[in-house]
Length: 304
Image 1 (tube, one colour):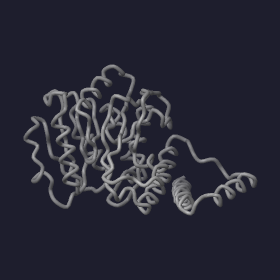
Image 2: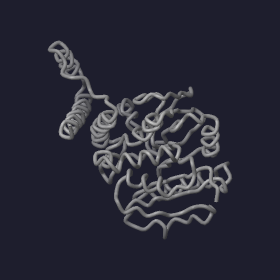
Image 3: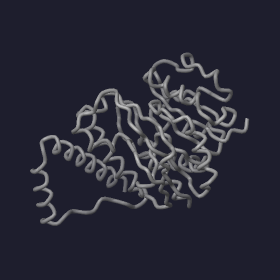
Image 4: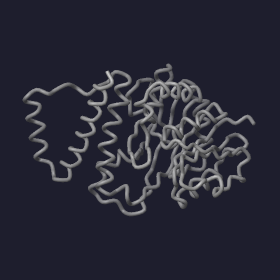
């Protein structure tokens, strides 16, 4: 087999309707199946997925069982098992456009200086989202844009792909895997059961910059991100904002970026004024982000 791409689909107790749609989109890709392999990493699901999900439609598809719970261990297993030079991470709620793999492969050829790239993640909500949720959609990995951007700067989120549909070169994945082995905090990043830590995908992308490569986002790469109703509940979004704030600060700290120090008395007074002008819900979200900030700072100080 001489695959151009390895598709790594990590899943834990998947929604069966969702993953069926994910696989249907993969089965319909315009890139011939002879040019890519499909790895389904069953991450400690309660039921063994290999006995329930038929992959006979693909000549180079494999089920892989990873019993260590967590998205990071699952992705590391996928990186280890992948045979191609370009890896694409697909979540179990990502519906790729039919030309996604072909377009990703072409971008990899046309932009050899990129180590990580991705595209638009367009939401499909099961229920109409309440208006108040829109300021927090960024935490749901929703990215819609119309211009291509790339750079070789770390912490440059305008060019950093999210984990959904992210493409990386195998050498970037291998280097990231070595970093994780040496760092217990990195090992804890990424979703793990009900734990909502994240930003491990940004860490992977920034690793490309560490290696002298770049990151990019391309409008012609599109996928649909399926959104169940529970992701629009306030309790879930509060947990997500707290975990995202924590995770972002931790990941940025690996490369020397830390939040600014204590503000002056005038700065604190201005923050106090803004806080009391917020609605009760806005205050709850602000407090969630502050809890994430304080947890991250405590983690960083204890590891020094």
